[in-house]
Image 1 (cartoon, rainbow, N blue to C red):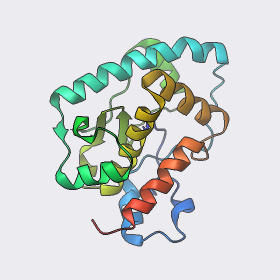
Image 2: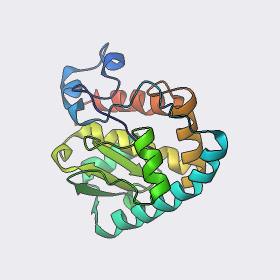
Image 3: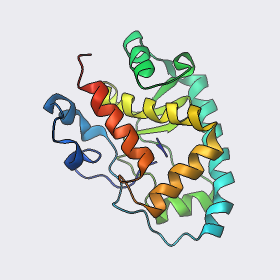
Image 4: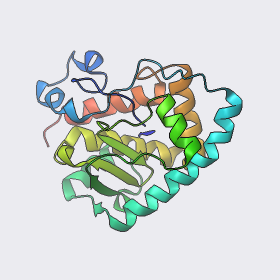
Length: 200
């Protein structure tokens, strides 16, 4: 995301594909064309003070989008519920998926400027997780790896206790360590590879 479930410009290949090749089924890798692919490091000159000012706005936006998704999205299928449990989601029945032509970008001027500055979300972003609400780009609708990856971020939201704690930690890692090296992203990449290496 973000954010599980949070993305930047895309390449032709999927998220961290160069790091997932060894031991990963080609069946799974071939589906990664719908994954978002961040820059190596999201360094746009955002100071810690600016980050602290933007974080509450990001949390408000994320909460509003989660409400939208949970009101209009679809419940997980039986197979997706099983994947959610494998991903460690404690309350998978709360998750909703909303299929959209493009992942929405915040309308608030400060958030939009920050998103533009660090290429936070691009038109090619495939998925975005906002706790129990997950945006999936429509052409990635049947991409199991996409959904599993985003479910991994839902599990992280649950573990960390909500929007503020998740976004602070995840975005801070992406800004300081870089993507996809950020530990929270590496955790979900490994989780997705493990789950998707098994039969659907």
